[in-house]
Amino acid sequence: MSKRDYYEVLGVTKSTDDKEIKKAYRRVAMKFHPDRNPDDPDADHKFKEATEAYDVLMDPEKRAAYDRFGHAGVDPSMGGGAGGFGGGNFSDIFGDVFGDIFGGGGGRGRGGPQRGSDLRYTLDISLEDAVRGTTVEIKVPSLSTCEKCDGSGAKKGSAPTTCGTCGGAGQVRMQQGFFQVQQACPTCRGRGKTISDPCNACHGQGRVEKTRTLSVKVPPGVDTGDRIRLSGEGEAGPDGGPPGDLFVQMSVRSHNIFERDGKNLYCEVPITFVDAALGGELEVPTLDGRVKLKIPAETQTGKLFRLRGKGVKPVRGGSVGDLLCRAVVETPVNLNKEQKSLLEQFQKTLGKGGHAQSPRQTSWFEGVKNFFDDLKI
Image (tube, rainbow, N blue to C red):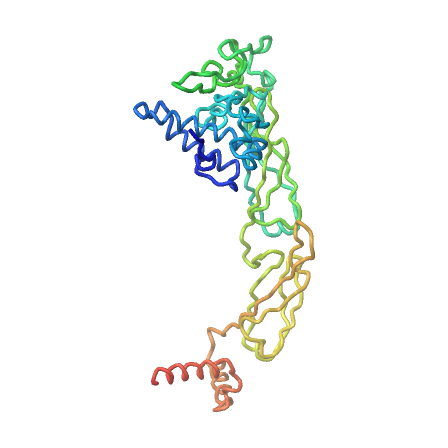
């Protein structure tokens, strides 16, 4: 009986990567597993066929030989030099693909003490501190190595012993029908050791919850979302394993005057009706202090004034940004009788030629007129 193409068996193509091949094999193996199809005589054949295809396509040498010579390139009986399916270990293949489901790892034992978990801390800072840089003390609750037992979990004078159930491997194999499934040892819970006389401080865990005070140096120019990594300041690893890292994530508070966009700062500058018309000079704030800003005559709302070098120096290097001030012309309020009278007189001086002093108003009315004229057509 001729063999089917391995790519066809798994429903993949020659360009499919190893990760997708593993997913495809998992689907086919689950579908045709003999224990799930006791009444289907073809299930066992299709299951073994899929496993054979997986064994070849996941091995770089075998896959290269198969792509070049077909089945002859991987069949020892036909002189294939890459080795055939017969030399493979089915339990290893199964554990590699399904180990994450059943808690195993394809026959791999414990790899020594595990690294502790990484931690994240969100640091809330002001815009000024983000731009200039600062040093902040933070309090971080985490699991730290128990000082009383030095992380062993055993009371002083005693020590953990190798687990008799798993022999120190931390995992045991169980037979489930056609398969051998590897899972965490129920006696030692995957640690590989048992503690007969646990430490009173950590109750045999080797770690205790502790709040530590750390000093964090915030470099100038950070922004919301930037992270500072403090190596070894995360949680202590179980069984004396190395600690994880602490990632301090920046969150810059909103400012009542400035708004940041990358390396530039923006702010609104209210100017009086008179200064906008005649021109003038104003003091505007920057993060370095006040500076003079010259307002030209006939300034309109929305005009941007750029103050070069008054923005932010990026934390990753580059030129300093600018401060852009947006003019907002304020209409006077709470006028007295004399002020109202003066404005009425001013309005009369404009007369019919007032449109020349209000170019935006003139163009707006022309646009409205054209709009209604088009509707009449």
